[in-house]
Image (cartoon, rainbow, N blue to C red; front, side):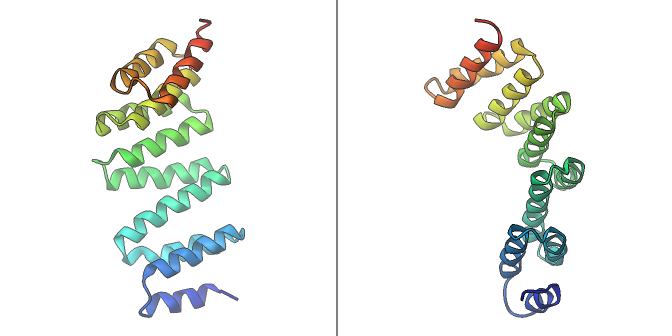
Length: 168
């Protein structure tokens, strides 16, 4: 049986942190979240693995609908990497999933500014506007995306959803 002490021993051996990372993932998949969280924390000496581990832990919290815990992790990652749109977008997506649409819009607007012409970020921003019933703002974002990517099927679908919500 895999135990925390065994994983710590493995971590101190010549094996890479990836061994511990994937074992922790297996623990989480089997529902042993508390042990998996603790195992992930042993990866702090490897900066890149620590970053990806924190992201994974936030995803586990989201899966368990522990939005505050996930938001705290994403905020810390966002502060650690302020030039990256990724964590800002993920925080916006978290707020959107939890129903905090104004907060989602604020984060996704920032992510869109950081990401430039990233289609995915802009589509998430448009979806947050729709969910918050800010249809004209959503329309502006979607039309901008469709201007850049006129045949993108997801953008076209989202535009159709928007028009339906607008009663057109």
